[in-house]
Length: 258
Image (tube, rainbow, N blue to C red):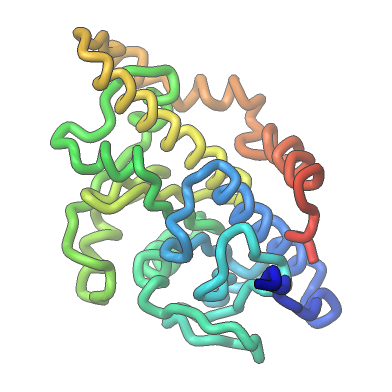
């Protein structure tokens, strides 16, 4: 059997603004990193980013492409209803945009919405107490965490107001029996938040599996976690780690930026 051919994707760099192109490159990088860190669920989750200078245009993955195949040019531009806004040959899944559209429409600070079905995240989302204060990573999550109860596969527009109300102004949303979601003022911020979210869940599952009595972090420490996070990242947020993450991708496969 001959090996499968790589997808031939024509560049759209000359058809979009420099600002949109940079967003496309960063979003494609985010998809590749999610695959690289093992958080992807084949083709069944999404990461979206607002097109710079707009309130109702977004970039999303072409439905059916694996996360490690996505490039800046393959990303599809859509509106708040999930309709394609350009002549992209790639399909989109409007139903998959249900959660994202609800958040983008009401959280104008959310330039990026990142949603995964990571195994450890789903496992913790099924636990009655959710994220426990067991690790340094967890204190940052708990300082800005919301929960949303499971209502079935997210296809119903009637769920949107409840999801938005549950999330409020938080950075982290645990979708019960479903997965994890983060928002960010930048793609880099959303990714770093997801890294911490997934790390906290992984540590919790491993600590529980150890079978010993667990030591929980006192609430007083959690209350100061937001300011501590700013100090740790030198107030740069995700941008502190983002250049290094891009160098990691460059060493592995730079095709994400085509």
